[in-house]
Each structure stands twice: as C-alpha cells, then as structure tokens.
Image (cartoon, rainbow, N blue to C red; front, side):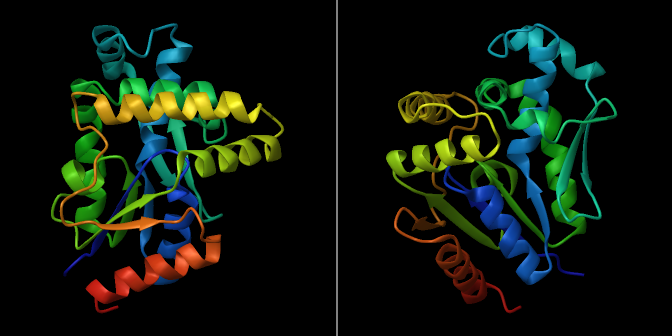
Length: 225
C-alpha cells in the first residue's frame, strides 16, 4: 500500500506545527512534529545539568533517554521523556534554544532518524521540522518551505508566550529568534535550508486560514487525494 509523505520545513515561528496539524487533520494524515522530538532531548540535557552544546555530554545521555511520541485521543502529539508527559514543559524559550543546540549533534540526529522515518513507512504523514525534505524524507511526495519575515515571526512568538502566561518583551524574543536562526542555518549537521524541489510559501501577510488553504492547494496539486 502506498503511503504519502508531506515535508514542511522552515524557520522557528513560521507556524509550521499548528498549520501542519490543521492540514493533516483536513487530509486525514498523521501529523509528526519533529521539533518536539528534539525539544524533548533538549529538555533531557537541561534536566541533567548538561550543556546542550556539549556534544559528548549530550551523546552520553542518549542510552538512558527514552523519547516517545504518542498521538492521544485529544488529537494532539504528546511527547514523553522517560515515561513522563513533557508536552507542556518543552514549549519554553529555554528548551527551544536547547533543542537547536542538540539538533546540531550528529549523534542526536542519528538517534532520532529511524524513529521519524519509520512513521513515514507505515502512515500517510505530514512531518515538519528543519531538515525533513533535505535529510529525513528526501523522497517525500510533497516538500514545502514555510517561512515569514523575522519581525512577523517574533511578533507571533511574543503573542504565543503572552497567551501561555509567560510574557517576554518583543525585543528579547526577536533577539532569541535571530540567534536560533543563525544556529539552525549554520550548523554543520543538517542545517536549515530549502530543498531544491520544495515549494516556498511566505505567510508573512497571510492569515492562519489563508495559509492552510495555500498549503492544501500545494498538496492537492501534487497528490491525488
């Protein structure tokens, strides 16, 4: 049986997770938030008192790190770290930066690669991240590079943090976002870049629903669903 895969890559704050989840629901695909997987490893490093940028130290944690991805009845992807549901805990700015750091380590990427690919072998999936179309699923049926201006992404993240009860000044969020962009784009291992055969979609001026519609149109042009 043929399983279809849709890869959505792009920088932090472009709305990949919420948008990919909406499109997955529309087409009945399994949604896989790979960023959450790396965030869970980043959280593990922080809890262990390990510098997320210290590759040998992070690698030493992997054998005792159990990362599980569970699609719960609420329709959301829940992340478990050594049996504990850490879905909420991995959404802080500190963990976001830790995720970017651990994702730069080849050992971490190898540790998680099979988990991601196995899901695509057994389900129709929409997977979002930084290197889905370039590394994880290079043969994906649809590849999309979703982006927005740095300023727009920072405003969105500022609003998101405020809604979660953890407000931060816009200027601080912008600086953190710019730092993460640099880390993601310049890391030696699987840097953030647009796949040559990906469709680029800038949603700086689009509403959420307009972006969902645009993504859906791209998918339908390439897959007979």
